[in-house]
Structure formats: C-alpha cells, structure tokens
Length: 279
Image (cartoon, rainbow, N blue to C red; front, side):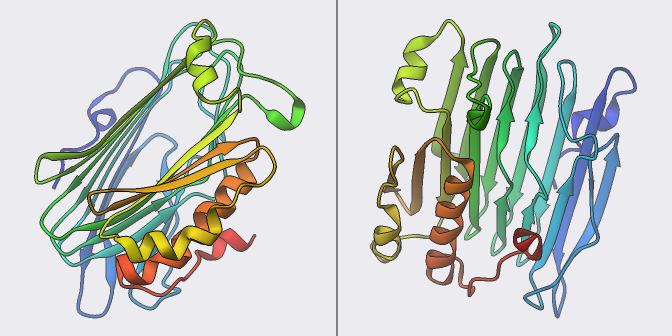
C-alpha cells in the first residue's frame, strides 16, 4: 500500500486528495479503500465486464487554478483489475502567480492490471502547472495508461503564449526504470514548441506486456490524418503510441482504437468501453 496522498495530511490552503485501493475478491475486483479530501471523488463502481471494476474519477469544480494541489494515490492489489477514466477534460486555468500541482502515484501489485484512461488536460494561456505521474509495477503487473495534453484552445485559435507546463511521467518495475519522460513548455521556450512542430495537441499511450503482435495489430491505425503525426514503438515490453496534431478528439479516438486492438493480447481482456465514453 502506498502512503496516503500528501493532501490528506494538510489542513491549510486549497488542497484535494484521493486514495483508492482495489482488491481482488472471488468473483470481481472491489473498491475496498477510498479516502478523500476536497473536491476529488469517484462515483460508485461499474461492472460492464462482470469482474473488472470501472471507476470514474471526478473533480466537480471543473478546473484547476494557480495554488490548487491535487494528490492521487491508487493501488491495484494482487490479482485485481481496475479501469479508471474521467467524464470530461481537466482544465488548468490562468494563474495569478502560483503554480497548480497534480501528483499521481499508481501502484500495480503482482498479477494485477490497472488501466488509467482519462480525458485530456487543457492548458489555458497563463496557466502555471506542474504534473508528476509515477507508476510502480510489481512482479507480473500489467497496465495501460494514456495522457493527452492540449496547449491553449485550438478551436478558438488561442495558443499557449503565456505560462508554463512541467509534466513528468515515470514507469518502474521492481524499482527499475522502464520509461522516464518530461515535457517542459513555456512562452519563452520556443525550441520546445518547435519540437512539437508548432502543433498544440500531443499525447502518449503506454501498454505493457506487448510485443510484435501488438505493434502489428495497431499498424493500420497509425495512418496520419491531415496535419496529424502518429507513431508506435516498443520499449522493452511496453508499447508506446504517440500522437501529435491539432485535435484532442482525434487523439482520443486513436488511443481508444489502439487500446481496443491490443487489449486482448497484452492485458488478456476483450475490448469493453467504459459506458461514459458513449455519452
């Protein structure tokens, strides 16, 4: 079990924390532990697959501003299988001077599966955001994870010309690093934006226990669409799919299609979309 989110121990400032623990029972995975503070919450679990626990992560205010802090800690216990998604995008609004902070620590114990499939992060001009996600895998644990970052609001032709983003993602198995990534974007760091070809939407999908069969399964899904760029590679046994383009909708559609295609081989389950994806 991971330590409680730091926010659970604080009593000053605008803090939100959520701690979830999933446990395997004879007939299905259950949400056995749930602690929260502030506006982070989850709905009651759903079981569209019978035994896999589907949970929707909620942040009722609908946005994060400077000075806000979100701490999320999730453990999938041995043999458990949980899927976590969100009903909408997370919006990071313009800051008046303080940083917004989100920390996620996901632990997947031996024999467990955790699928972390939220909707996109949208960064409004002037947002100051620090994100840190760490995934710890133990033994034969398996996982699927995606993140989609939208700089500004492309549909309004609004670019990210003020503020900064510092986003880290790290994946470990038994303490050994498998994936270490960092994205830093600021208005005065044009070089970083040029590495994104000047495009506002980027995303990554990671699925463990993959191989050449999974690369082949998603090959036909990676064709470019207009100004979009896509690609896939294997880092050890982790399938990494990238999107770079102008549309969060197309990014989500690509990742969902790839997830459906490779889920049976990599995670041992037939595709089963969360119900909320259809709304």
